[in-house]
Length: 321
Ligand SMILES: C[S@@+](CC[C@H](N)C(=O)[O-])C[C@H]1O[C@@H](n2cnc3c(N)ncnc32)[C@H](O)[C@@H]1O
Image (cartoon, rainbow, N blue to C red):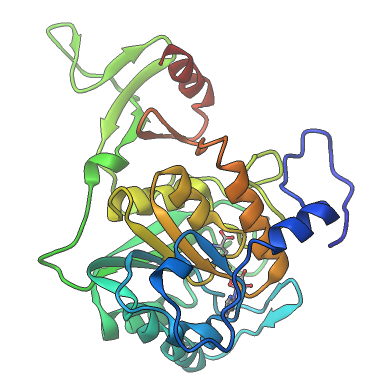
C-alpha cells in the first residue's frame, strides 16, 4: 500500500491501514479445502489463486459467469507479472481453467469472456469448444495516446455464450438505451418514437452488439480504483441485467477491484468473486461496503442506459422521480 498525492476532485477509492485490516478480515480463503458448500461462497470475495480452489467449488451454482482474465499482454497486477505469449500458449492458458468455469454454470446459465484483438481468436476458440457462442460484443474503449507505428487500440471484445440455446435467460427490455435524436421526425406535428424534454430529444432503443456509450473509469469517477484494468460498472450492469434474473448468482473468477460483485449487489443479484491479490480483494470489499448506501451506477438512471455526456439530463430525471 503506497499513499499517492491526489488532486482535490480525485475520487479514487483507497484504503487506510485500518480499513485494510478490517476488509482483509472479510475475505474468504479456501486453499487446501476439498469441498466448499454453496453457503460459503454466496456474497463472498475469495482471496486465492483460482486454480487452487476451483475444483472444490459446488457445480452448476452460477446463473451468470463474467470472466475478465489477464489479456495476452505483459502486464503487472500488483507484483504479479502476466507475460505476453504466443497465440497457442495463450489458448493453452485459457484451456487450463475455462472448462472448470463452465462446470460451475447452471444448465440455463450464460457466460461472458472479455478480451482484446490479440486474444480474441483464442477466446472465441475456447468458448466454442465448451459452449454455444451467441454473439461478440465490441466495446469502443477510448483511452490513451495514439501509437506512432500502428493504429491505436480502442476496442475490446466480450464474447457471449450459453449452455443451452433453447433455455437461457435474456431480458432485452432491461438494457434499453436512451439516445439523443439528431434528426427528430414528426408525425402530425407529434414526435414519432421519441420524447421531447427540456434537456433535449431522446429515443429509447434496443441495444446492439456495438457499445460506444461507456467510458473507462477515471480519477474523477466515484467507482475508480488504482486497479490497472478495472472494468466500468456501466458495462457490467448491461451484462448482469440482460443475463441474470433478480436474486440470481453472478460469479467472477478474476474479480480484480470487485466491479462484477459490486454491480451485482447494486442490482439485487447475489455474487461471488475470486481474486488472488489481497489488496485488490480488499478494494472489492470496500466497494461492496459503499454499495450498502450508494446503489448508483454512472450512466444507468431510471432503468435505462444513457449516452455519454448526458449527466445533466440524467440528474434532472433523478430530481423529478
Ligand atoms: C483483467 S483483471 C480483472 C479486472 C476486473 N474486471 C475489475 O473490474 O477490476 C484480472 C484480475 O485477475 C487476477 N488474477 C490473475 N490470475 C489469477 C488467478 N489465477 N486467480 C485469481 N485471480 C487472478 C489479477 O490479479 C487481476 O486483478
